[in-house]
Image (cartoon, rainbow, N blue to C red; front, side):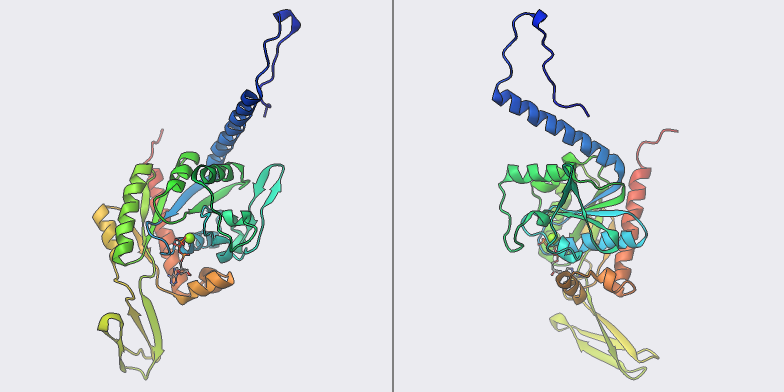
Length: 335
Ligand SMILES: Nc1ncnc2c1ncn2[C@@H]1O[C@H](COP(=O)(O)OP(=O)(O)OP(=O)(O)O)[C@@H](O)[C@H]1O
Ligand SMILES: [Mg+2]
């Protein structure tokens, strides 16, 4: 690509006009850098087939767990997958991907992602921190500038899917990403079955509409906790669940029984989805293995690919893929 514009003045043109001031020069350089970045983003749009944002209204509902789970489940299907962790204040995707303590690798001005489990490429704001315990407190414009730079300067290569994990709430970050990255397929909204989280996810749906990015649907996380036990075949077992509810199960012929307790109210995600006329992408169980996986850097999907949580993730991925297929098939077609 050509460099910044240079003066073509020759002596026969008459007296030389005054050159640009230092200020003008800086502005020209900034405009040039911005143009280059914009072009890089447009080419990103082409080299990454699908881009999915993961959002929630409320913090701690499991966005990062869902983002990393989606990325890993897609990688398990053989896709080329990347994950972009936008959370500057509390980024924990690298930890969940087994990349704790990594730093960025920069070559010829391009940022190269780290490779996590199953070859998933990871870029996180955490790679910029000197010390994981120091939260980055960046003022708004600097933070948003850094996000744009991140998007434009990362060398992802060709990807089938890029999953973008956000900090909680309807802040400026999703807006910046939606404006910077072309052709986002849509967003997945994560909620827990509690009322407050539900209210907030309603807010995020309204916000999604204002971003003009399609809502792919709602995932209900921490939906129920399944107890597994053993008793003589045919025995009826009673378990006191939360809220004083008694759950009854009968042991199978092989002497095993399972009871699913609703730790929070169940079905809220589906109800919100129905209310707003958006798809329900599925429910993920409450699974203490997610917490352990977050701490020791091996996601549940990697440590237990056949387990109930992985199966539930598989269903959510299938629902997301169906939505993306649907979204693209409703686009303009030239025949
Ligand atoms: N289905 C689940 N079962 C059990 N624990 C879970 C589940 N999903 C997430 N968690 C745990 O809940 C905590 C918060 O999850 P996570 O970090 O994914 O949420 P988040 O929405 O990304 O949070 P933040 O808003 O801070 O970015 C973590 O300790 C995680 O391990
Ligand atoms: Mg998070």
